[in-house]
Image (tube, rainbow, N blue to C red):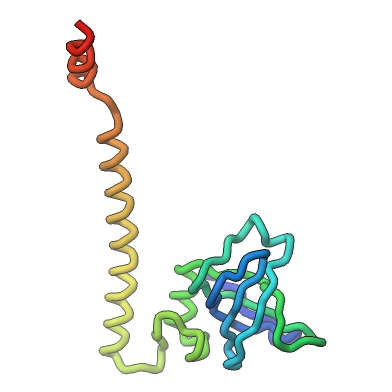
Length: 149
């Protein structure tokens, strides 16, 4: 899996979207420990929706260090992958997984990944069941006709 990483040359860093403030702004907890007000640029506004708890890449402003721009958002699968590879700093590691841990922890991470995939399958099954229930059958039409004579 290819996952783009922050460009350290232009001062990009990992962050967690902590709180959505509205007006294309959010509060993000950065990997350096600071909490910054981040602005979602116009090119990302309708293409990538940032929610609370998402892993994002931000670029702090040069002239106001307490503010930043959001550069990109990672999906849950991408953030899980980065966590497993040990790329994420501990402060922004959503899943708490890394490669350096003992083999028992690696089994726990595999169980977490399987649980994550199973929850997606369960949700898909529930959607299919609802779709099947909403399709009217011949018996339903006969019941309705009996009311009107």
